[in-house]
Image (cartoon, rainbow, N blue to C red; front, side):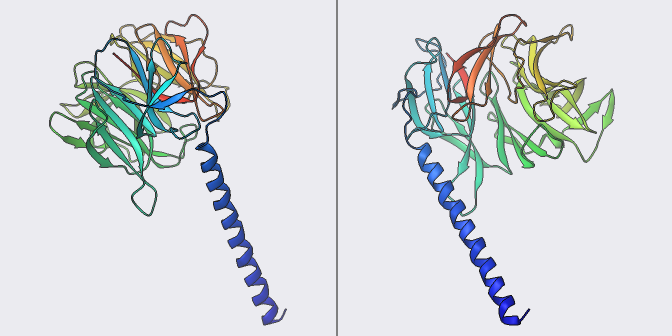
Length: 342
């Protein structure tokens, strides 16, 4: 093969790769623009005031709106007794969100830089930015303590799915009373099986807070296993309590944790079932939802939990009794990351 022919083949290959790249960008742009167009049959959404303030005349849900249209990804609200009704959108966009006692945590894309980046934004009751913190990876979990004084978030810093084992997370805790930020739970002392424990493969995710504004629960992964841990913010310690628990969420009365559990024999891509753990007896109860749920579940009250499953426009919300009875019921379409307020 002559030198001229080799150069021609090389130039043709470069041109072809460039064309493929341009086509991918055009398709991605077209898809993004399509999501900005309202779909027929979707929920009615109008711009208005959204508040995180406690109390109020009626209980409400604040969530990430996933319906296609100009308000996609914005925080929106509906009355808790009319979840399928018209939505009020806030203009504030979040990828992950939670709120309690007038404090919100919003994990969002930072569109100000050249490269894609993310930040954690603490919101006041009027959705105004109180503080912001850069994130080391892709947002995945967020929580606020019942009293609104503590916030936590988890990001993927390597890999992008809990289903496999090839991922790394970073979980941070912020005390709004003092402004102290613990950038990584990996800095806390670990007690496993009654002994001090250290390992370079330690990962944490899925924090949930107790009402004392000091105690928390979370998932610890190490040595190919996951563990429920109880944390003490003042002592900066975490203690393992039980194996095979992920993404715990503490009930409003503080007596139970709902969590996802890996069940042997299920698909590696959909390995979880939902359970509730009674903290006094350590008895587990399987919930009626038989689909695999990759979410940190939310309690609506002491009797019912809500979680997300993939939907036509990203995610839909479902509800199921927390005592193992009943059947799963659709709650909201095109919605994610709910907080029940009021």
